[in-house]
Length: 466
Ligand SMILES: [Mg+2]
Image (cartoon, rainbow, N blue to C red; front, side, top):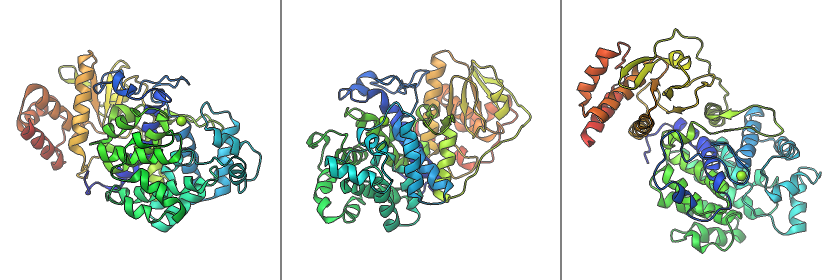
């Protein structure tokens, strides 16, 4: 964890992390405990990864489920209305439910299909059933937690409760969302959400506090849960437990998915908070690169990584920006090192489709290649997570090379970020020093750019570790 990380990395990490958790956990939903680690005892970095798809609903690899679908409805409503419009959010939910999504919680379905007005549907359901503390409002609350974080504790916890109450009449569910919002606010500010748990508990209504304090206590473990993790308490309890136990984003998700049960939802909640803590660069590129899905009832648009990153930025700043790199003269691909080709953006975009693509910049329109990894590196000195990202990229490259793939490494201009990875690859595979690797690449790739001093420093750190 680093407190110097730029806020934008945390914001993107939160939204993308929640979608990644959802998609990663979906194939294991309602399966036995430990299934994820049995199937993937070590990281799967080749062409087949842990984003395996399947499950009882037949998800495609990387496809997100209802958790992210509904999250996106909250997110787009907030951005398009420049704030919370509960009627609009409920209306979006209802249109989604009416479109027959493959996966929808029982409680959410009965509230949204009741035909009752937005301000009474959930309360009436709760009065009738007495059961309304499922995790279905917590699972979709990451976008609102991002949006309201900048307005402070009171505003974000208030919004959490109101959005939860649209479908979950039990205030206990709203209190869980309020705690989550406050932990997210702290994490996005660069603080430690675990240290903020006592503070967040103080915000909970008196009659609900004990039950929340139990599952968020430092010595609570998932085997002490008194309900299945379809309920809101163990879902947040498992999230905080995994954040406490895990050493990085991937381990946090492995821990929660290995608990079994409602794996997509718990991983979605945990992925949101862990993404804020570890940042976009802490999310394994092999997972983030393939995350995608549609939102039933809301058009045919396919949401992908870049769309989620753009939406996350809009949630944090209130400003929507789209990215179009335009048409740039192609450079490459050129084989610079054995099996490793280099290019600029359009050189890689129009390369042969059997290349495995290592992308280090924003793309604009998606590529058509089947195998592509997108790593989050900015062409500046503000990549506080550069060592983690670089290690992730190199491990993936090694696994893909071992399968016999030709790799094309590219960034926008093919100069600085591409040069960083080519140099690091030489250090890793040939045992060169940073200076030797720089000289070697410069001779073979005249586009090499060395203007980011922090990149060369990262290579020297890498050399010192080896
Ligand atoms: Mg789901």
